[in-house]
Length: 101
Image (cartoon, rainbow, N blue to C red; front, side):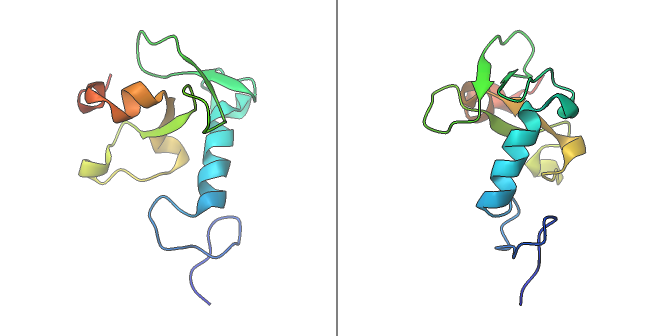
């Protein structure tokens, strides 16, 4: 048997984890425990000046994405709780993601 993720499920070896890992990470970002002001269902994008309310539904245009911050991928940033924040798709995948604030 291969590696196991933090929940004890088999890992696919992908640095972002399997679908269970990614779903759990998005749910945590929306939770009050994450410290980003989420209520369990919604949270604001963490980029300064953005007022987009994010939801945990990938079919919606305002779905929550996971931004590696303060250490981005190119600098070895990992998908761990101390290095992620909620971001709207525009900021996380768009041109503005090149200059994170």
